[in-house]
Image (tube, rainbow, N blue to C red):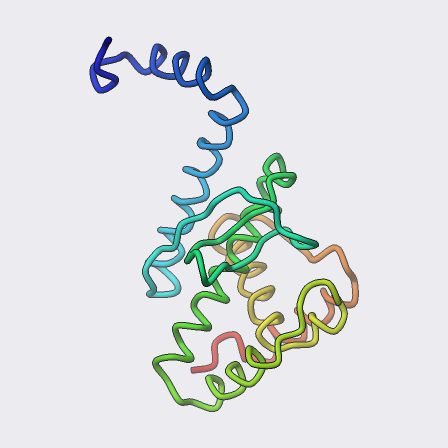
Length: 177
């Protein structure tokens, strides 16, 4: 049996696909792409350690910050929509940052966020979920980073939620210390 470290890349790919399937190979490529984004954003914007991302069913949401598994879970049905995937990853990274911030600071913002996390309204109630500052902050962060870092104009598909995001960005709270 050949040592996989000595195999040419095309032979390694072919063997992997034979064993695990083309879909798994493609998912790994997407996960690598997302992990690069995570490392960039964590280092350049959030000053937190990168967190892994996995494809796994997420009930009613595109993505979830899973604190038990210490990862971001992304619904695999969105793997073909790169912009939606990146927006979701950015959103969850901001939640990760919020948690780190709350555990290290006792500012008015940290206190507001702590209160909201303790009384969190999940994504299965979209309009109630969207009025939370932690959600507006995460959505705003995703929108701003997509535009500034990647040149992608992204808007939330729900007009009422988008309006809340725009108001949050205008308020300057995204940059509040």
